[in-house]
Length: 389
Image (cartoon, rainbow, N blue to C red; front, side, top):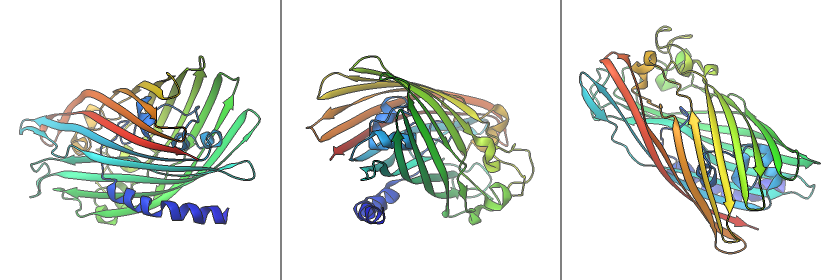
């Protein structure tokens, strides 16, 4: 295992450094979480907790790694959210429109029959960049939050049951402009644990269950006056259950149900009126726990072409009472339509592609600007490359 880890680190070191540079912040689609982490996951509405078919499958469920062979996968999502506010002071759109979000995964079967997987991917984030000041400080107003996950997975299979466990390191960075509660770029580090199982009930039907603990992070010291408990900003935990049904040799259908526990992080979930910003038990963004329903289809037309499509519905974590701070992070989209596919260049290499669209959604409430409406829609294009060994 030590030798394998050293070889893997050598191969991925340059790519990891590049990914960290490229992983610019964006607004995710399930509040602050990404819909999916790979090109193919995005093409199928973020589904796949019970379907191990690619190296990046381990990011949805660590157990999936046990059902994937020796494989390297790279991907890049160009994410384009359009978000804005409307109030008595005027209508304003956030200026930043395009964000590159990379991912990489390497899956390696071991001599003992188990599997090692390492994946680096953007979990989510938040971004706004308004051309005017919103909070009484001279600079234009905006925030940048990025979260990068680095998961090392050990997975195996016993009979019809696959299992996997993923110790996960998290790096996040935050910057705010035009706020009275802190400024400048800051970094936070931490981690937690992801684990999952997949049970093959038959040759056609599989059930999957995956869970992620809260990722405990160091504090954003520069923003001790903004985030609850003097700059504490952990990453919420989640749990996902799903099934995959192979209707025939060509068609696979998937259904995933996810629960995201924003209530586990006070800086995100505390009421905006809970107390002073930055204080222990103080005000947060007021986000609620949400459920996400995902549907996905994969159709293998022939040995060269595979088509995918999906739909996801995400509850909106932001209510009218939360609009004040949600100006900074209007993650209110609910419906997601996706399509994509894979084109096999040869027996070992293939190109993946996906398009995702989330129609506009809005929330109206009271803020320090008076009656205020926040809204958002988004579009993304993803490409990837898979190499089987």
